[in-house]
Amino acid sequence: MLSLDRNKISKFDKKAFSQLTALVFVNLSNNPFEVLPTSLLTWSTEVKIISMKTLSLFQLDKKVFDSNKIKIVEASQFAVCCISPQHVHCTEDAPWYRSCSDLLVDTSVKVVTKVMSALLFLINVVCIFIHFLNITNKAYSAVVVANNISNVLFCGFLTMLWATDLFFSRTFIFQNHRWRSGPLCFSASGLHLFHSLTSAIFTAFLSFCRLMIVIHPFDTKMKRTKSVVKYIMVFVLIFCLLSLCLCLAEKFVYHGIMTELCILYVDPTKSVIIAKVLVWNHFCSHFFFIVAIAIMHVSISVKFQKSQMKIPKSTKDDTSKGLNIQLGILSTSTIICWIPESIIYVTLMFLPVYPIKFVAWTPIVVKAVNPILMPLTLCVYSIKSMVKEKSKKKDQEALLWTPVAGAMSCEH
Image 1 (tube, rainbow, N blue to C red):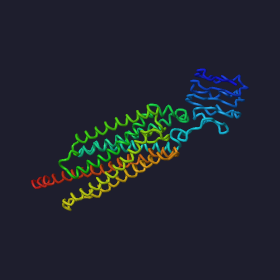
Image 2 (spheres, helix red, strand yellow):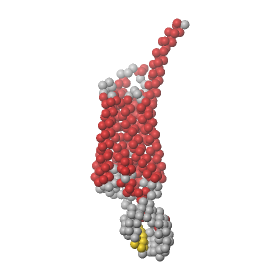
Image 3 (cartoon, one colour):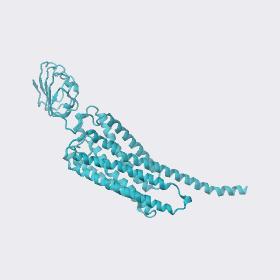
Image 4 (cartoon, rainbow, N blue to C red):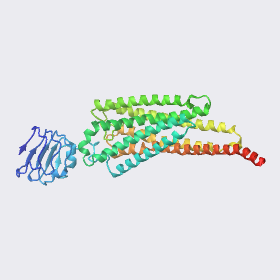
């Protein structure tokens, strides 16, 4: 029997126990060491009980427990039990909401996270570039670009998840608390929350601007770039401060974010008041915005069709049809993204136990639908309108040059 409890041991030599061949019980508890050498117990083949309580292990190889005679592992860190062999009785089981796997629970989640983050970044950056080129309606482009930047921040959230998963590959179970209480998870939770708040308000604000332009095409403030940018800056400032305050509150009041995915809307312990407030706010506000956006889109379509009726048939084009398709896609993308996400968060509040993998798919797939579909739709129709504008200019130039060319031919 060997008790090294409370000896302030910070490091073990790999041959520290090489002469202790008859050792049966080892107590390593309450010491500041963070790593155990893989071969520490290689020579102590008779060990049956290992006590590893109140440790802050940074890394532990499962080969430490290779001795077939080990029967009991006493631990206060569930990660130790995650890597102990099945025939060993470990005293600290992982809570149901903590996984013994990596940050991203399996290969499918890892792959989809990387693909979604790449798609989000590519589509939204291209959309930003296209709308910077759109000089005909700078106010409209400003709102679209603001929403795209918010989506890029959400892409940053996903990137932080898969990059952390890659960095802590196979050792994340020992970094769980460090990750959740550290600055990276705090930043990731802020990005996720900021995007959740701003994506809804920017989408609704875009629909409102378009409606005002249709109703008041000449005297609305929503056509003035400075006015629109002021509104955007106010929204950004308010939601930046709100996201920061909520993240700081959860970090310091509850000593870290509750979930490994750094989502403030999920609380498996059912003890965080902030999570409950956020979930119900998300549910109510997003349903309100869905209804408001749908009403505004219908109003835009009706008003536009009425204005088209005043135009002679010879000068009409398929703009009305294209607009209806665009509005339909935008409304659908908000519905298939926001409704399932809101319902999932509310449902998780009442379920006593649920699969961790189910939580992982929510931000990676469900939440990513709108940030991909909306910019893609706006990009396609912006390109179409830009091409039309160019073709109209060419036609006008051709009409201007025709009389000149005729006059020149008459002179000859």
